[in-house]
Image 1: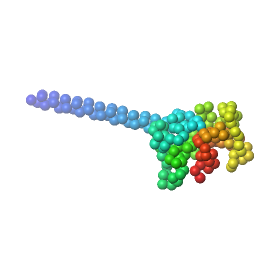
Image 2 (image 1 turned 60 degrees about the vertical axis):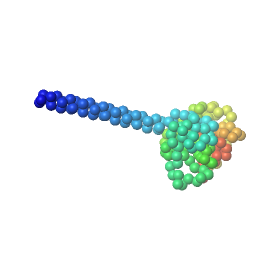
Image 3 (image 1 turned 30 degrees about the horizontal axis):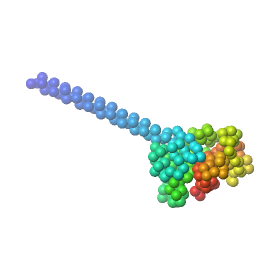
Length: 199
């Protein structure tokens, strides 16, 4: 009888150990999957390129919900209570990093990256490989149908390099006085032409 009890206890301990090991592995697997998912969400905002029609699968004219679904990340305002209904910005996960989407009449009307306030914006380029840090000469080589206007605020040598100026959809490259791109915006008129965003 004692022998049977000892065997029973041994089997119980062995089974308990196996279940604990399985649970630990399952928890580790779930944790790893969660980390991967989080990484994918943070990288999703960087793997596409800009064009005058949009950013990767996000097209000018989409609703916020459509754009979020296409991008695979929720686009939302960091301060919705302060937004004006006619014009506001949404960002991936509500974070200012990377890229901003202007919303007018509840549709995406302009997309932009800017040196300084967008931490990873230098990773985002147009389909032609132009982005923050590109030079005026590089923009000219990449885009033939280019108009050059004086920058309305910056020093005399700063410019607006406008691709497809006469058309509804445009790309505007803002350069500093050294001829280096410090902002890129794409979208439709008139929103793409707004100098101070929604201000």
